[in-house]
Image (cartoon, rainbow, N blue to C red; front, side):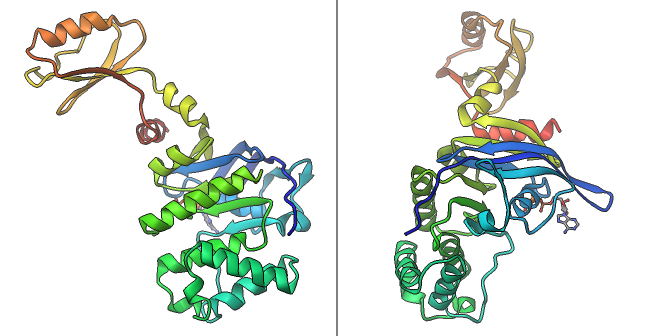
Length: 302
Ligand SMILES: Nc1ncnc2c1ncn2[C@@H]1O[C@H](COP(=O)(O)OP(=O)(O)OP(=O)(O)O)[C@@H](O)[C@H]1O
């Protein structure tokens, strides 16, 4: 089996226009060896374009992509496991034949290609379908085969465009496990997703792209703490606006409970006293925004 040399994947200053539309503007980030990087952003933000440039299926107007200290050339590209958004399997070819063919294309011997095909189809739960044409599989199973295609030659880098979309919960678990395992082997893993709970759970670092620009980049904890401290107060009798004007309160959302956004100069006892003055208080707790809230804030601020 080829041994993966661990190295970082670096994307620096990528710029790309399609006619008058600037799809990418100076996109820069790194995915360390063994790191899982989540690439998130609204529809049309530039995720697929970035991934296509990493793969070399699309040329950038400016910027570089390197693996270790090497620019991505044809040799490096052959070592990247890629799951394109538009998927890329031959619908009229049998699953098993297709995976063996791809593994051979990436340099595996016939026996290694057969062994890896057996391993990954079993691992991804499609071993019963190796004799079927891809087109006869359900979309979720086609996606499992697509992941097998990205993994079958033991790639040194994984670039996966929305690998979780359309998968059932069991397949999501298997996919999560596989990505974590590949990262554990030292492979840089980058995937895009709109499922922010998964991104938050799986990723070491996250990039939020908006309108072709990297709007926020960091570990999940860094991004979440950037949202500042908040208080969640459950005071059912409190009238709308009860926390407005208290020291350190930037704004408050009055829903079934109140979420108070703070600037750090607040006095929580004063806020608690104000809440108690309205009636009973069932919950009074500080909260860090989750990635979904952060994402909303970053993309609505664009
Ligand atoms: N081949 C192309 N020709 C013209 N415009 C393109 C082309 N490819 C992408 N674009 C445009 O570039 C922008 C970025 O698209 P991209 O597919 O990278 O977004 P994305 O973040 O992957 O979106 P989604 O989450 O919807 O998949 C969009 O405005 C898109 O319409």
